[in-house]
Every structure is written in structure tokens, then in C-alpha cells.
Length: 617
Image (tube, rainbow, N blue to C red):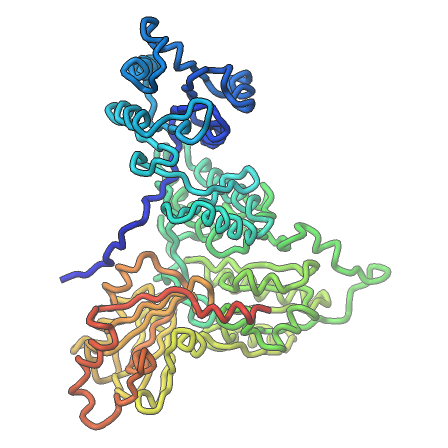
């Protein structure tokens, strides 16, 4: 029977809601704050308060004079025969509220703010009567300082530089001031280019849709930025490509002759999603309208991260305009699994002191790129599905061209450049053009990622050897996976996106050419490690029997990812288990797995040890 995550109650359903019409009861500073938030959401704002405009705070008086809000005097709505009453929220006042609601249809949200402010502070009993009246008309209500009369609450919100980006934090009533503090801390850590990046991506999405609107009105992506990846360096896997054929869900650099306008629009939206996911924020923020047009046509704009179009000005011109006879150099560099502190000293030196041009693969994180001096041009490879070969050639040609101009070029790759990083073909290509690159090793994710997940690839009593392989061959072809050996750890790079096929090849009795020998038992421990060493690292551990369901129940994938299979996966968990290789240990495997997973079928762990924050370079 399928198992899914158990809900942990006490949270809220957080929505980004833009009500057409909103009612605010009260006219003090809190009412003004609620009105401002509603106006930023393009809502029609109605203020209903005792005393009307005369008793309103200065801000609401000003907004009413500017026509931004409509402010109604509740007292004037009370029937004349009852207007002298001094009681609060008696049937006469409710009658005034009913009249207002009859005259102002379409209100979907209401905020009762006068429960906490004078001069007309509303009692608990009065608030309850007003609440019931509003609820009878299916209006959702927030009552200040009366949580039991709230259908919704407000988050502590910050809008980033008047952009479309808003940050909201809630502690669900556990600490309002703490929410504000956490929100300030989050906002303070946002890069200064965040608002510009959001604005540019929005424009890029609009352009992508606009290009096909005449032929496919109503065809939209539904707001889903679903991405499909490719095989990238050091075995970092996204959803790999089967071929370079143009289809609606495989972005390619140019439109094919058989592609419809609808397919073209969808392809462009996929392209935008890929750029949003992998390009540094600073590069997204620097996009110009011409850059956006080039992107949608399949051409990556060759602009630096921080100074667009400045590279020509920064390139020295030889005296007397004579050709530059001095050729530059090319460094083929590995940046490690992602955390900037795992850069080797040699890599750090090349990036920060020697580079004139950095040609980076898309999975190299911002934290590494941020170490590069602002004067150095950075170009990001557009290795998207259907264009991996073209992007690879584009990077190699750019390196040759720059080196021939005398520049020092750094070809920056994730992990180690020779572990499924295509470094070999680049070495041969550069050599054929008369340039001998220097290859600088990097910390490979094949070793580092398991370590970050507390999994040793070798361990006395659990794993005597390990094998690293890929989960997919060139152009999506299947490969032959190694046979089961109890004392061996198997590390599979570029396999997470096709996990069901990989698992079937490992456990099937009739795997044929998909596996070299013995099948893996269904209770063999396995781990999916995603975005190793990064703050959003995720590790899903289970058995081969249940790992497919475990990953599906964990939400969307977080490339890059890898698969680790073998008894080393559980050997360091908790009190540890290093008796796996003892004679007859197989008989206790079911109990061993049950203790490891605490009776469950899988476990999901998020993040890295906080101590890594101390090691940031």
C-alpha cells in the first residue's frame, strides 16, 4: 500500500491573494496599513468607521482625498430613530452594516481593525456580532487581536523595491515580533540585484508568450515553470534528453520547420524556466531587451555578469593595431560539488587572480561565481535539453577565440572536470587548435556528496570497494549497470531523472544487457542525494524496493542529484552498523533495515550541518 507524508498540523495555507474588493472596519493607523497593502494588490478599498472622515487618521484622510479609498461613516448608516443609542454593535449598528453591504456588493475580504485602537474601540461581543454578519455573506474575516474570530491572518511582509517579489513570514500566532525579525533577516540577505532579476524574468516570460499569442491565444503554461534538464558536468543530472528532436517539452535553440506556434510558445516558456533556475541573479538582473530577444531566439547574450558590453572596452588593444602575437592560456577547472569552501587553492587562485574570461557551466552556483572579480567577464553555458552538443561546441570555440586574443580563459566546471565532465574532448579540441590546457582537479561529487549525506563509500565491515558509473548513456541510451556485490558501494551519476528504469535494471531477474550479473536484493539500502553541500541539500533514503515511491512523495526533484546503492548507506546512521559483511549477516538484513528506517519505508533529510557556515570563504 502506498505511503505518503503525514501532515503535521498547526501550519497555515499560505496564498498570494488579490481580492477585487476589500472592506476595512476602523480608521486608525492599522486600518491605514491594511489599506495600503490592499491598494498594492490593486484592490478596491472601502473603509467603514464610526465618526467617518472626521475621526480617521491623517493617512486615510489623505488617501480618501486622493480617491484611493472610499471612506464611509458608519454612524450615518444607522437608522435615524436609533442613532442616539450609545451601545456598541446593537441591532441598529448591524442594520447599518447590512445596508452598507447591500449597497457595496462583491466584497470578499474584511478586516476588523478597531478592536485594538481608540477612540471607538470595539468590544469582544461587538466584534463577534460583526463577524457573524460578515460570515453570513461568505466574507472571510480577520479580527485584530481576536484569533478565534479570524478566517485568515497576515504574514509579516516585505515587498522588494516595489517589484513583483514579496517575502512573507508567519509563526502562526507563536510570535508576531519574531516574524518581523525573521523577515528582516531574510530580506537583508537578498542580493541587491534581486528586484531587477524578478522584473527581467517577468518581461522575458511576457515576451515568450507574446511571440505566439496571435496563433495560440489561451495557450498558457498555467503558471508552471516546469523544467527539463540535461546531462551536465560531473554527473550532475537533471531530466536527460533522449534526442535533439524538437518537441513542446524540449527547449531547443531554434524553431524546427514542423513546430507549431503553440509548441514554439511552450518551448520558449521551458527555456525561460531553465534560465530562471540556473543563471545567477546578477546575470538575470543585467539582461537588456536585446538580450531577451536573443535568448528567445536561442542565442545566449555574451554579457558579463556585472558590466554588460564592457568586455570590449576592457580588452587591451595592441599598439599600432598590430595583431597580438602572444597567445593566451586555457585552464580547465573543477569547482567542487557546490560549497565555495571546497574549491582547491589552485582553482581559487585561477578564478580570483589570473582569469580574463570565465566560461562557466550552468550548475556552478552563485556563491562560487561571486568570488570572481567584477572586471572579469563571465559567460554561462546554455546546456539545455536538445542543445547540449551545440552549447559544448560554443564554449570550446569561445575559449579558442579568446585565447588567440591573448586572454587567460578559465573553463569552469562543476565537481571534477574529468568525472563525466567532458574534459577529455575539450583537451583534445584545444590541442588540435594549438593550445594545451592545464587541467586543475576539483573535489568530485561522487565522493563529496555521500560524505555530506553521512555515507562513506568505503567502510570496514560494510563496504570494501566502490564503483562510479553513469545512469544514462549518450543521447539517452541505456547502459549496462554493475552486478550486485554485498561489499561494494555503487554510485550512479546522472540517473535520478530516470530512477524507475535504473531501479528495474538493478533488481530485475531478467535484466539482460542492462546489468552485468547478479540482481540486487529489494531490501538493499539506497540514497538519493540532491544539491549536495548546498543549503537546500536533500537526502532521501530507503530501499530499492521503495525508493521510487519515496522520491515521488518528496516533491519535485532538485538537480543536480545522484544515487548511492549499498550497505554503506546505513552503516553510519545512529549507533552505526558495521557487521554487514560478517558471515551469515544476510539473514538479519530485514531487521537491520527496519531498525535503520525506524519501522518506516523511507526517510527525508534536509539541509547541511550548520557548521559549514563557519567555513564560507
